[in-house]
Length: 217
Image (cartoon, rainbow, N blue to C red; front, side, top):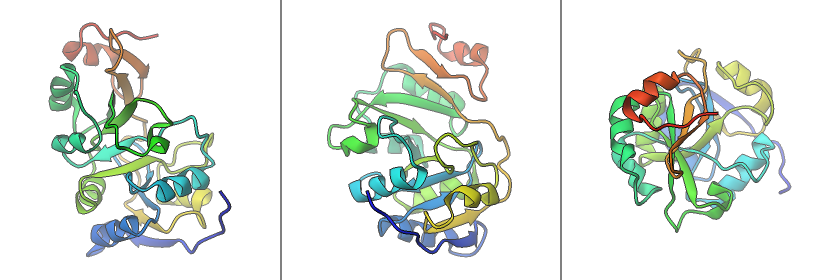
């Protein structure tokens, strides 16, 4: 889609009203960069196809790669997923908030572009106060992926994100360096047996304490 540069505002994540302002930007179809426990993310309204189109453009992300959804509380998973696998509750209780992304059956009425036309959705609850405040202010769920141009290193600071996305996003919430700096582990609960798609920051043995039949490459 044709796009042009936009002014990118930088705001401290700790500034009064920062999360409310960021949520307002999201509701208006804008893109917001924000810190999480793993890496900086860039997010948009998960229900808005035009906003999702902008997100793909901003990152130069291939359309066959779906966009994950971050949530502020496990109950908000019902905004995007249905028919939750039995293992979901145990994994959420053990590893959320934290560095685990779960692949779950999607709701039928989600924009197809969010899920790259597939029948699943990736969901995570981050362990970072600024991220959780923004997600809660935005209604509990935001489509978000790493705040970098596709193929570039995932950003650990707001400055890293700006280096790739300045002029492509509306707002950057600067919350300092991400505490972990390692991408989340990804487990697909829609396969039998469940499969580890990305190792991330969680050890396989730790995951198998909850999910003994977890398969990995």
